[in-house]
Image 1 (cartoon, rainbow over the protein chains, first blue to last red):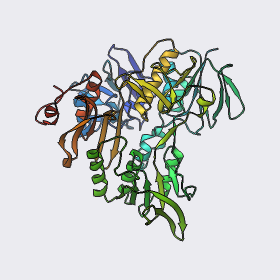
Image 2 (image 1 turned 90 degrees about the vertical axis):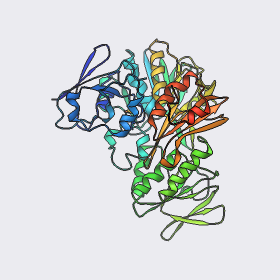
Image 3 (image 1 turned 180 degrees about the vertical axis):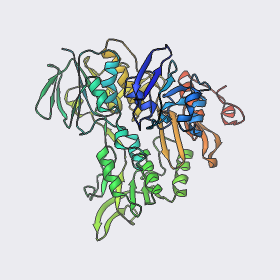
Length: 106
Length: 401
Ligand code: FES
C-alpha cells in the first residue's frame, strides 16, 4: 500500500493511501487535508493546490509544463520545490511520497 | 435538534457538506440533490470530459467514500418541494418531511430556455448537467454540423471542443459581438478572430426564428431570411437562478436569493450559497451574483463556519477561467463599469493582459495565456491599485512593482 504524506506548515501530518488515477490534489481534497484547496479542479488556473515536492521525488512525476511554471511564478510562498499538486498524478508504481504545504494558498 | 439540510447538488452543496465536518459540526448533515449522481464538477463538461481526458469518476467533486467518512447523508434523485420556515422543515418530492436546525440553499441556476417554434425538438440541448453533456457528446461527431446559439463562455468552449474533433461549427449571436456582457470590444474581437481562424462560421447580430426538421436533419431559419442546416444545436443564452423554493418561502430574492456578508438570508436559520446567492461585495460596493466555482466553494466554507459558531465573512474576490483551443483566459474581477482599458502585450501573439480601469483604479484584468499577470492581479486588485496607463502597457517592466 502506497502512502502519500501531507505535512502542513505547522508540521501536522496526514497520511493517505494513494489511489491510481488521482492527483496529489484530488487525493487531499477527498481526505479532508485542509491545506490544499484546488479551486479550479486541476485546470491549472488557480494555484490553490500549491505544494512542495522534494527533488528526490521529482522523477516519479511528469515535468513542469510551461503553464504550471508560469502559474507558480507569482504564487505566494513560492520556493525551488514548488509544484501544483493537481499536476502530480499517482500511478500504479508511484512509491511513498511526502509533500509539504504552504501556510496559506492565498 | 442539530441537523443541517443542504438543498442542491452542485459545487456549493458538496463543499458545504464536507466543510461543516471540517469545521467541527457534530450534528447530522443531509444533502438533497435532484440529480441521480453525486455532485460533480461542471467546468470540464465542455472540455476535458468532452474529449474523454477527464473520466466521470474524476468529475466527482468528492468521492462516495468521503461522504461516508464525513457521515453525510446524501439523498439523490429527490427534490425539495417546499420550505416551511415556521416549523423549520422541508418537504421532499418523496413526500417525506425533514426538520432542520439550519438550512443551506444551494440550488444553483438553470439554463435560459430558447423560446421559438421548434425549440422542443430533440436536436436542441443545453449544457448544465452531466446528462446534458452525455447527450451532446453522443450527438456531435466529426462529420456533424453543430449549431451553437449564444456566444457566451459555454457556447464558445463547446464550439472549440467540437472543432477539435473536426465537426463543422456555426455560432449565432444576437449581439454585435461575442462575450458582450463580460468583456470589452477588443477582447470580443480577439475571440472572434480566434474562432474564425479555427474554422468556425460566426454569425453576429443575428436572431433565430424557428427550427424545423428536414429529410436528413434540421434547419434553422434566421431573422435575415437565411436558413442553416445542422445536426445538433446547443443553446447557451444565459442562466436563471433557481429561486422558486426561496421565493415561495417568502425569503427576500432579487436576481438570486439575497444574503448578507455571512451568506445568511432574511431568515436567521437559512443560508444561500453558490450561483443562486445575491451577495454583497465590498470591493465593488454592490450586490453581485456570480456563476463561479471558486466563489461557490468559498461561500460554502463561510456558511459552514458560521453554522459552526465561528463567525466568518464572505469577502472573496471574483475570478474566472476559460480554456478554448490553445488559449487560456483567466479573469480577475468584474469589468462592469470600467471607463478605460489598457492592453499589455501583443494580442496577435495570443499572450496579453487587458486591464479595465475605473477612475484610474484597476477593477479587473482579462489575462490571455498570461498566468503571472492574472495571479498578481487577483492578489493586488482587491487592495485598490492605481497604476499609470503607461506603466501598464510597458512590457519591459513589471506593472505591479
Ligand atoms: S487545482 Fe487549480 S491549479 Fe491545481
